[in-house]
Amino acid sequence: MAAQPPHIYGAPGVLGVTATIAAWEHGDAWLAEVLAILDRNRHTIAKRLPASVGYRVPEATYLGWLDFGIQDAAGVIERGARVRLAPGPIYYGGDTCARLNFGTSGPILEEMLSRIGTALDQGEEQV
Image (cartoon, rainbow, N blue to C red; front, side, top):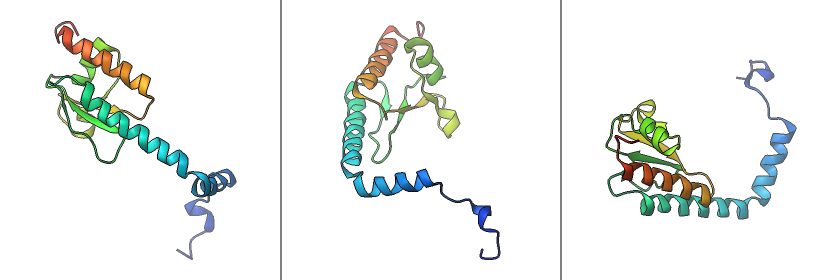
């Protein structure tokens, strides 16, 4: 590697270095708050999703994997609930699965889950 030009692998910018130092020196409280929010959100999903939707509380992520048991799950939910989920097949999951990013505020997550629940209650044929 020493024989390679120094710029070939890139270099951190001054703002990136400053932000990294600030995060390491002063970011503990922020990180604790973010982790608490994500923990609350992942458990909120488990409490609020209809029993018909498969969900396993993730241990270390802000992404929930949902199994709706219906074909084109992400499309059905987007049309019926106006909530965009990532389609399962993109991530090598089945067409009945979708991925929910729960790295958001409590009120937004509550609204998303409410819309999903209402759409599912109305039935797939109306969604």
